[in-house]
Image 1 (tube, rainbow, N blue to C red):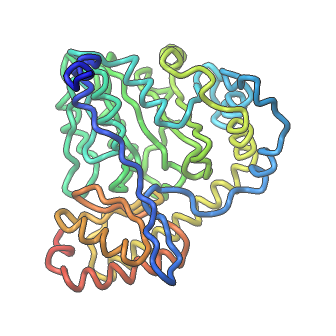
Image 2: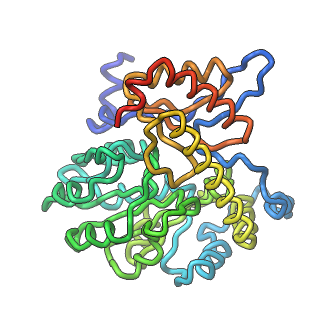
Length: 367
């Protein structure tokens, strides 16, 4: 079978879809403990209650509850909304993919910030829709006026990320409300808050406070980050029932396993501990940012569990310096994202940044 014949199987949109590139594993270096700071994973051990929940008896031959009814009920109680306003799926990524499928097709347009979560480009390109990536502001924030200006009669979906992955700043409540006032009611806005538990900016928007005010708003959150359950793939969407119902039509049946649901319920039952651990990571993040700025680095506002270094063409050189020290960071070509990890890992990376900025001070410190 020729390559040309194989290619004819696929829709033209497939050629425009980039492959998702996960965070790299750290290289092994003699005498060094390796640290992975490339995937924004929770570095603390799992909560004991979560570990215990995984020992609950189950029948592997039986499908899990496709509606995740028990977890949905727990989420509804926690969030203070009706169960019909929630759908649970295999991570926030499935929520994004489902949203793209139910809103976009060839001839439609989608608006999203750039750089932001890489999956936005991937899942929207697959639909054949026209993509409108809007560059961030010079301080690495969403340019919401420009995003509003980019909306046309063909726009069906707008994606927002707060705090923004990979750059770190959060959207303020005032910015968000001003933006929503400019969005037509027939355009769906998805607010991706995968990292909301780590936010410390009192002015940052809380999507849950906004979701009842805007019928065209859907909120996406996850158990992957602050809850430390990335390996169990649990995310959820909150919105008006008609939006939730549509998302459900594009989800994979039985996508959330029973052990995953049990782990998420146990984590919700100990939400105070989850939030306390998130605050501790935020404190470590702020200390890391302070240390970087003391070295002379220009660091954007950091509101998640990572820090962004806008290294531009020096990104690969910096990544290689980290690799030599058994550190894995996320090189996105125009900058490097560093996840908050163990104290020893952060101390080691500060040693790397100190040496690096000494060699490249005129580039790394320019505003």
